[in-house]
Length: 65
Image 1 (spheres, rainbow, N blue to C red):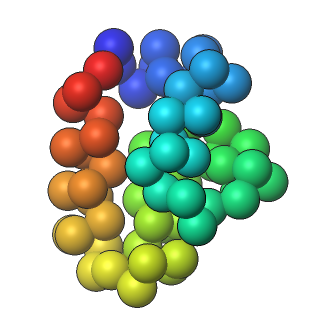
Image 2 (image 1 turned 135 degrees about the vertical axis):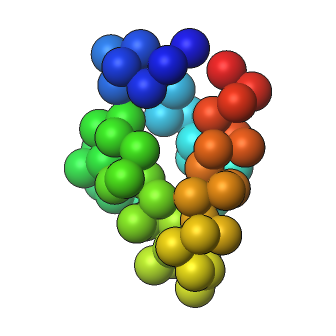
């Protein structure tokens, strides 16, 4: 699945993101709308990660789709 497909299926995929990053709220995930950069920013902010670490974590999660 590519990011365009994730964006298109965000309502379904959002639950999996919530399982991975439990500190993210539904409102935050709704605002991300399946956009990679938005999700990276949320992970970076909520978990205090560097941008590179957040990108790697999001990309690792994404690669399972």
